[in-house]
Image 1 (cartoon, rainbow, N blue to C red):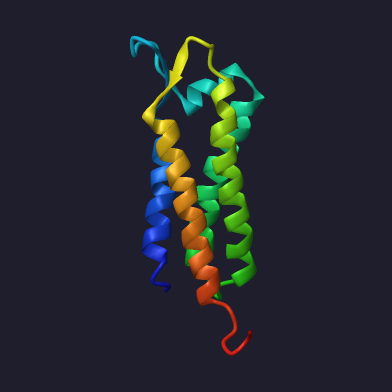
Image 2: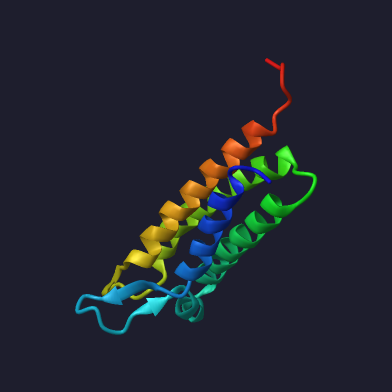
Amino acid sequence: MSRFAALGTSLATGLLVLTATTWAANEEGADPYTLWGLVAEGWVALLMLAFVAGTALTTYWLFLAEPPTRIGHLVMVFVSLTTAVWVLVVEQVPPEEFDSAPGRWLTLLGALALAGVHGFRAEELSPRGSG
């Protein structure tokens, strides 16, 4: 098992937990929205939920798979970065009087961290002596 497996699976677990934390709330902090609650507001949030859950579940699979694949980790770098971009796009989903909450920004950081972990794992799997 890779030295990055514990970190990658921990970050993936964190991403799944963050889907149930507050992503948006009105200025008084009342009427909070989780990512699951935002799905009713439109397709952008549904796509965001799919990105976050898909990134987390695929991370588990890649770090626990035998034999490990370098290309899989390189693809997940791209998917994790796309997830981070969608976290920024999803701000348009709740009503205008709502502000971003910590769950959204922590998911952004988690997706960026997962991109780094997958990148380091892909580098670890690169063929020796090339370059």
